[in-house]
Image (cartoon, rainbow, N blue to C red; front, side):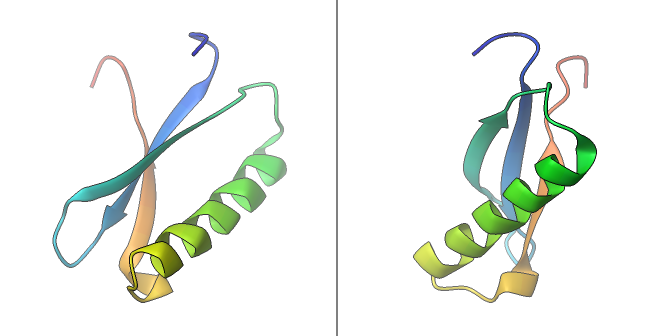
Length: 64
């Protein structure tokens, strides 16, 4: 991926484990990024058979 891309991990809040990783273009506006992350969150919850509220995302920072 390009360094300009934003990278996210989706985490199961009950276990604390990252269950999915995804990258989005940093050229997208904030609302479009949130919309896509919500859609991915729903798909990840369904695929892992867990409640939607159990999944959350974090942006992965390189210097963290």
